[in-house]
Amino acid sequence: MTTVSTTPTTTPVQPVPTPQPAMRLREIVFGAARSAAVRAAARLGVADALGDKPATADELAAVVKTEAGPLRRLLRALSCYGIFTENADGTFAHTEMSRLLRKDDPNSLRDISLWCTEPWTWEVWPRLDDAVRSGGNVFEDVFGKEFFDYLHEDAHESAQVFNRAMTTSSMQSALDVAALLDLTGVSVVADIGGGQGHVLASLLEKHPSVSGTLMDLPGVVARADERLRDGGPLSGRASIVAGDCREGIPVAADLYIIKNILEWDDDSTRRALRAVIAAARPGARVVVIENLVDDTPSMRFTTAMDLLLLLNVGGAKHTRQSLVERLSDAGLAIGEIRPVNPYLHAFECVIPD
Image (tube, rainbow, N blue to C red):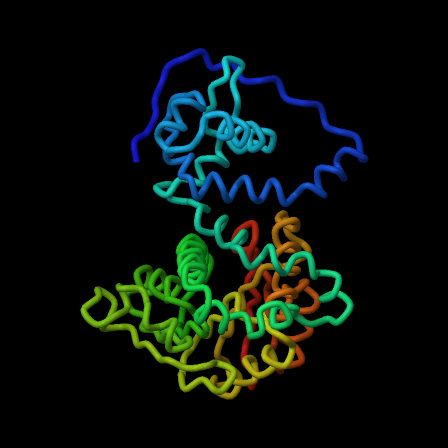
């Protein structure tokens, strides 16, 4: 895609004062418009079209092949929230947030923005009151089948967006996890429900004497990180096991990592933790890494994720206390709880003697 670069005056529009409570509530009620605007900008590639220098809506419209007037309205709406900025001369420029919608940004959130606004989300959000009443998901009522069955059988494009979003999220957090974990005394690490294995690959790259196993569902590990696969640079120290961790874990390790999988219903969470305890020897470490809905600087994000989990799979994000209770009830001895980054916490646990 061509990138537009121009050199007009770049005086920013003056910020609008903080609105009163009644107007803030009105803005919240119109939150769907904000989400839709982000989705439209991502799908149109507006952030990719805009270069380092400001450009007019007419110039951008010529690149992304839209009408200039509606594009100007879209950019103006996004600029109200710090996604792009509108200058006094009518041009638009990048902000830190708008750059995150670029495909080539190393911290890109484009795919995650698309995932959180996929067509099915607009069908289930209006049923949130039903989910709150029942305590279960509404997805099956709306679409006639379970969430992941629908995704892979009926919504192939959405499934691809999901895969890209999860890959992006995992890759971005993998280095943070690798930087946090001390692997002193660890010879073998197991990443349980580890997706494509980005965390495991980052750990093996950092610790050349450590070997590891990635375990996840067959369709997930089939897309494992190329570094771990046969012929990859880490394949000599990595093994890949296909299976459902709730049904058993045929892996012996010094350290088990469980990241972002204890979001199911309570029964599934108990089964997964019991499987880890059954597989591990006494004294083995278990590190559970999760988003928390409290005690975090990203509560608006994590509480929204929590509600979406309720809607689509009947799951939940944890509070610090609820996760401590589940880990303790499973029989794990909990040690230090540390932040991995602004939206993840690591719970250091040990298999008791």
